[in-house]
Length: 252
Ligand code: NAD
Image 1: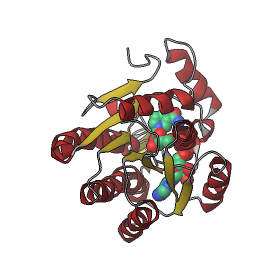
Image 2: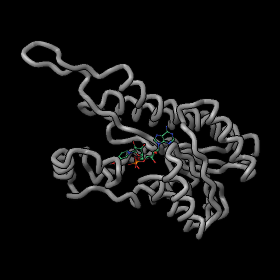
Image 3: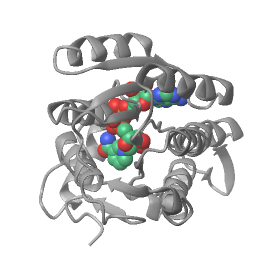
């Protein structure tokens, strides 16, 4: 699918990887519908992108089913249809499942800490995927849905919540590839390694340095390297149901 004049929805489109994708796709002539919970960042992103393409921001929380349904209805009204959804919005709330000292448990990951990450990363991805597919089918458009997973899908210490959500979004993309091909909709996932964004800037510097040393290519990834991978998936009509690990070889 060529991006020129296609309608692309990006969740979490006002920050980090989402914003890098928005700029990359705008340069190819795509029209953009950006969803983000952070209204200030969203307005800034739309103002910046507005010089190069047609762009609309939708300030909503992807964990809220009513807001998601309404948001996709607005996008359909504003643009007429949807061709691409990038399910990119995600959060981290790391912590050990249990912490103990001298045989005594001193801390637990709270239910709220677990569930909040599942709600945004997994449930939000499901809701947006469902609504985007419904619009693609009803408007008879070819479509592509890409879920942003993570290298954490393999299971990371201190990331019960995040790892489970990222394994989940990768699996959902594979399921959607099988389920939606009959409607001319493809699906895939991208599992980035450690990429330099606000999300990683919030990590402890010593943890980040340790991670960087584990990457065979010797550096963090760039947001643009994820954007160009997502673009490759969109542009290549024979890509379907695969999870692309873009991580500098960290898992080798
Ligand atoms: P980021 O924090 O810079 O951006 C995420 C965006 O999502 C923000 O603009 C935020 O406002 C938005 N968002 C958060 N909760 C939301 C909600 N409930 N509803 C709507 N929008 C919401 O993060 P990033 O580094 O750009 O990460 C983007 C995606 O890539 C995430 O899913 C993340 O898990 C994944 N990822 C990032 C890395 C990395 O190293 N940066 C690695 C692997 C995977």
